[in-house]
Image (cartoon, rainbow, N blue to C red; front, side, top):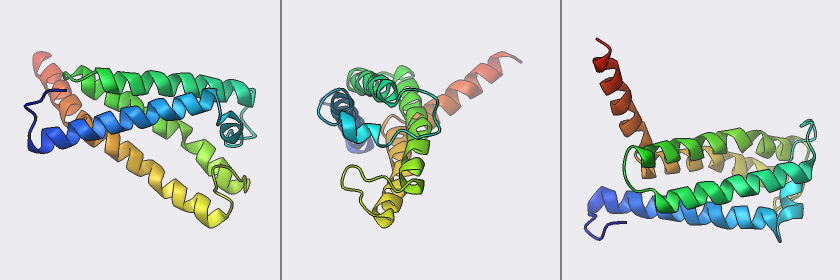
Length: 150
């Protein structure tokens, strides 16, 4: 992270670093002391061992968090942001399953609390896309690539 960052760039860098740290911490939790809580969020309809899902998602979260903390140059930064956003979308069914199946985990012991949590998942997607400037960079990259084909 550059010390010369000002205004929106500093805000984006802080958002990216914060998200990287949060993802890394969550991933470590998946692999250690929060493993049982995360198992409760694995949808029952998923035909995979819940512990495997928790471990795999923990490893992915540690990797994505590390990538956010290490990748500061575009367009790689935008690609990492897009991957993190896609991950958040991919795990959303687990949050829905927790609500639908009335599963208590992480202090979410009422449907109202679980519903509030669902509302925050899209905010995580917006957060990481904004912090990494993914939408703008990938849109410009796509436009440049399309201009080259003419």
